[in-house]
Length: 291
Image 1: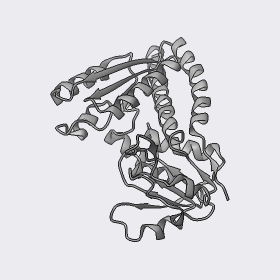
Image 2: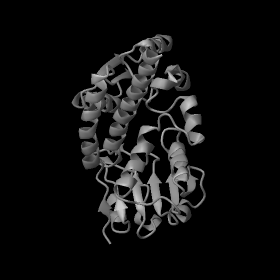
Image 3: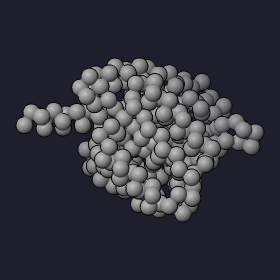
Image 4: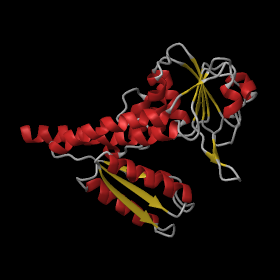
């Protein structure tokens, strides 16, 4: 068996073509979607991510504002900038690029983002709404994974899904989404005993731990769908995921590559959430004018 490729890059390109039409329609209603990205520090990977996000916005015809601050910036100053963005009618989505420098309280900075502009889905209000099954904004990476599965006609209902990783950014919201899609979900982590005994049960296996090639072929059920969220840079400069791609592809039915799998979908879902925020703003404005 050789697994089929879940080509996130190709799917994201198709979606972004649709986004251009949606952006144009909203702009005609006076709500051109706008995204602000806040980057603190000089992390090279973060700089690349931010450039990609800003470029994607511009390609879709969206307004973007890129705020870059040195790592030495007083956290109170960053929160002030975020609060100003909360009040800016041109901005519908605010993204704080993680990780922040060590001296920052990430939770406090993320909490400063208005829940109505939290297109990353990290605000406690939005986390709670997702947990209750009525999300405003779904975190971009898990949302992208669900779109990938749907695009290939992969059924979550009744499947055994195993997630390796329990972060608030990927693992936990991924579990909630798969539960909502009627999968039976197991979340594994660094303290899980005999990890392979869990992963070998998975019809859908999601790896999101940040450890290169951690998931090997002997840990995968034949015919499983394997989603590799990890992205790691090796000593030779090459990128690889959390899955040993070459060996696992010989066992799985579907697999995402790194790069070109989940990463492009994450950016596409960021645009989708920002467009949704602009849509909500347009509807609110039209209701106000109607009153």
